[in-house]
Length: 169
Image 1 (cartoon, rainbow, N blue to C red):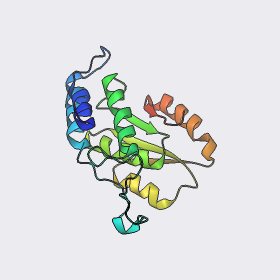
Image 2: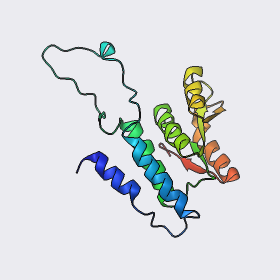
Image 3: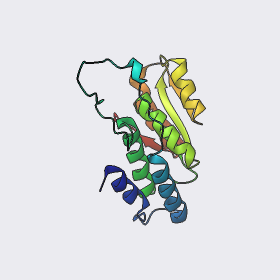
Image 4: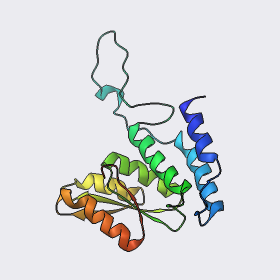
């Protein structure tokens, strides 16, 4: 069984946690995510932008053409887990302190299931990266100091009763 088949099987399985408020939505979201996962666009450089080595076949670490790169897989795993335990539902807000690439992947997935998304980023984050999050339907919360992103995100998640995706927490 391929990695993609394993993920689809896990995502399509019935959520097992009794605290899931809307089990029908959770099953729908898991099935929809499983269907989109293999179709998600890769964020790889164009072939001309990669270094060339004579006589060597190139593989980028963490890349899997069938199942996405590391950031896609990580975002997918966090979101599927959140849905399966009832922490992410149809009316949820998801706040991310993950890397920008993982946050972009999370925004992509969450847009497809209609869940609100906010990426918490340091004020120094480039405008193009923040615009990319917005283009995927997410919002961006900026903080003056990057070191405060995690603690401030936890405070905001508590106040909003949001689910926190914290890769570096």
